[in-house]
Image (cartoon, rainbow, N blue to C red; front, side, top):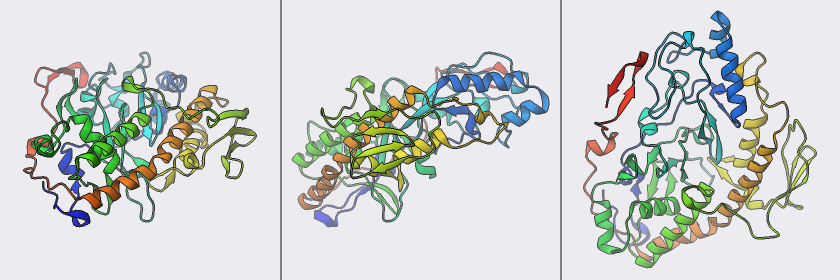
Length: 399
């Protein structure tokens, strides 16, 4: 891995060479396994296990990867069953928090028999210290973050486009950073006090950019620019984590915080933004003030607020498990919407700082990173030699 030195003509480093191990997006295979609230998932599970025969098969929605008669190994760290789902009559497994889309944390049924491609290697390293970097798809003519960071397992499908998922650590407990061997040593040659794993991820979040070749990361040669970029990246990540990992929950200054001015109706069907009044209208519901930065924030060319709303209000087909959902707009959804507006507004306000960082990197010169290519082992999941997991039909396997 080597970035060419010298000003704006330098070469950025592919993110694939910075964080070598990555996994593709999850493929759920059936939409009913994820929902914005836990009660809905439990109701869907109960309806499914109460059904039998052809009715259960129709509700389950079998695919080539998953069916009622196919035993599957348990997801690492989860208590889901491993036998044939046709014989399942137990209680609903405890739903887990899940990043269903950009800035949209929902809940997922953690049963491997229900998920077509669950990426067990990611579940194996998901814990209270892990962070996941998710690459965002490139849309010509659209700006936006190249990488988003999540503290919970992400689906990895930004705006419907597949995106690689890169854990910060290769092992549980914050062990073995997922960074190219030699990268941190090369950075320390110029920045002696830098290059912890969190520093590198922060720099990626701040300086990473989406190109036709994928996500690329320019590295500066200037210690002052490096320090400012890392600080900016930490702010960006802290906002995205929303208080997780010991951080503070994001808040706008007094007078700029969004409030509910008129209650959201039971079944809102439209979301409209009044730019002049800075008001978000959900039919008769009114939320204000909503900064333009929040409304205009896009990922992969899709306005985040509109996508969030659509995933909660789209009309499901009758007779499906997706049709089991809250009968009225829950109060917690409004609270989540207010927080999402805050997050997007704060991130939008930092877009100018990200642009200034890119200009500073080009003006002060590029860091010519002399790092050997990552070996094949660094691009594969780490072995967990003492970790027992339940395989299909209840048999234990040693990884």
